[in-house]
Length: 283
Ligand SMILES: [Zn+2]
Image (cartoon, rainbow, N blue to C red; front, side):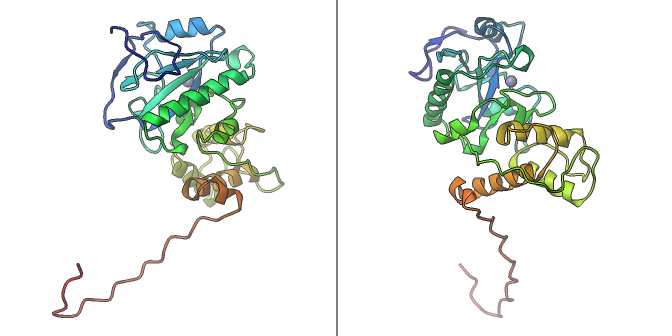
């Protein structure tokens, strides 16, 4: 593919990757997926994302010093999410823009993300949101859409900082308090309720009433993103309450959730009185 011009003025340079194809379904992406590269050197990561043999890519790479490189035009389908699912949709590459954030990751000591790199991620997301309609809850981690395979960008990624700049949905984590926990191999209605809530938010798990490995992995992904103080896959009171607040925030906004609002109960179904004979049909 010939060099293309960057989608945004925040891009410092374009390095063309051959690893993309056409989006299917939606005309425009409605998700942003954030990754870390998991490689020691940013230049190696960019080379790999442009290597036809690697068959992976992303739309953007944000280097540690804050510079932004574009590899694939936004209209094209980059190959960053792999086998993944969110909100019942398994073709995440078709509906998302992928951003690789240079960080060696858990395998190489997992350093903190530099402040200027995070500032660049925020600037880039803002720019993407001027061209694409993306709901806050659809700005997600790779680990959210592939919990059993991926842990990037990881629990050090400052989602709170992004939310303060109106990027993504986030609520203050509920405090840790003593109370019943749910963990691997537990069964019953409480597990079913948890699975329903996770599914409702977007995670791809079965609602089968058993706290299986898939459920644990989704809980860990949830914790990495929304309750990063303790990522153990055990649903404690704080994890459950943070998820509840998040579902409220998605519906009513973060301020209402912070004020302790509950979700409105579904309106009771009132049976319609039978229409009288000869009555005109309601318009
Ligand atoms: Zn990733």
